[in-house]
Length: 285
Ligand SMILES: CCCCCCCC(=O)CC(=O)SCCNC(=O)CCNC(=O)[C@H](O)C(C)(C)COP(=O)(O)OP(=O)(O)OC[C@H]1O[C@@H](n2cnc3c(N)ncnc32)[C@H](O)[C@@H]1OP(=O)(O)O
Ligand SMILES: NC(=O)C1=CN([C@@H]2O[C@H](COP(=O)(O)OP(=O)(O)OC[C@H]3O[C@@H](n4cnc5c(N)ncnc54)[C@H](O)[C@@H]3O)[C@@H](O)[C@H]2O)C=CC1
Image 1 (tube, rainbow, N blue to C red):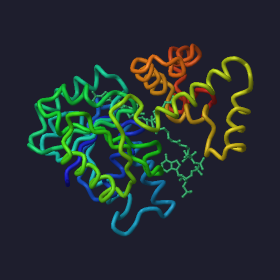
Image 2 (image 1 turned 120 degrees about the vertical axis):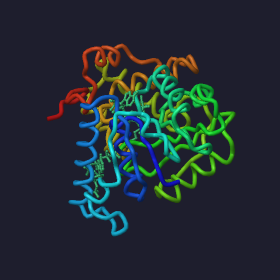
Image 3 (image 1 turned 135 degrees about the horizontal axis):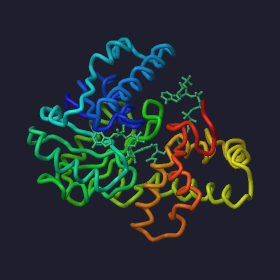
Image 4 (image 1 turned 30 degrees about the horizontal axis):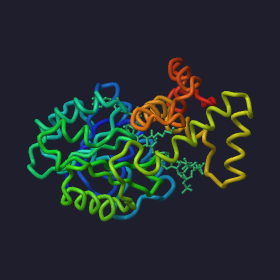
């Protein structure tokens, strides 16, 4: 696979585009507006400049400018027509993703192109059956920050072909140098099925006044060797995404541990989405 498209150039899409371009792929990022495209390009430039300044770009990757030259940021979905693999990384909304997969199905021309989703929690089957080619639809779930974390969850639906799964594995492991684990197509896959109750429990603990945000996070960093505490992690993920993922899991399993706590709902209503808006459980400059 040579030509890659990433739909949505937010936190995750920009990271997926970066690692793809660093692996030598020709990458098109499709955003929803000119302003969002500008913001996506800014994220890519900042991250690549940081990687270059830290000496993380290898000889085969070239300079930050070389990597950026392999990426185009567009607003027209038709620019995905000649792609071998499309990775969708738009907002965690089933309706928005189903609509996008329908449109991609009518645009992406190669008969064997892979249509992948980076969804955290939406069943892949719902996206597969929105297309005329569910055998080629798969979950390829990256972790945040994409340039740092090695894991990718591969999530075939009941209709995904073994050929699609194996070509996806070859791409993430062989080309992007990530490590894949295989997951069933159930909301939350492996990691989020475990991580969501953990983060939501931390929010409930804070909401109840049991401990401060700082002490909850310090507890997990100093006492369980986590790289950051659960509330700081929720701020990194984005509280809108955290809430949407919790809701998908709750819808699938009706398990109270997956129910979004009222405080999380209020913070999202207030626009306190974490790092991306400058304030969540913590304030960022
Ligand atoms: C209810 C739940 C709902 C779930 C919702 C959906 C979520 C999903 O679907 C799946 C997910 O992704 S879950 C999130 C998984 N991510 C984590 O758990 C991150 C945990 N945190 C970390 O790894 C570090 O704190 C972290 C790497 C972030 C920062 O590390 P440090 O605190 O040590 O800070 P630094 O010293 O600045 O960074 C360490 C090295 O990493 C590099 N780096 C950090 N951020 C980066 C970024 N954004 N892009 C590229 N590189 C980055 C940094 O440069 C540094 O590198 P070195 O200097 O070489 O060590
Ligand atoms: N935030 C996280 O830690 C992780 C998120 N994910 C998943 O990745 C996906 C994206 O999440 P984030 O990057 O965090 O969200 P984000 O909010 O940072 O980015 C979403 C981007 O999609 C764009 N967009 C929305 N609708 C679009 C459309 N129809 N066409 C083109 N672009 C569109 C938005 O302008 C925005 O830039 C979600 O499915 C999420 O569940 C997966 C792993 C980790």
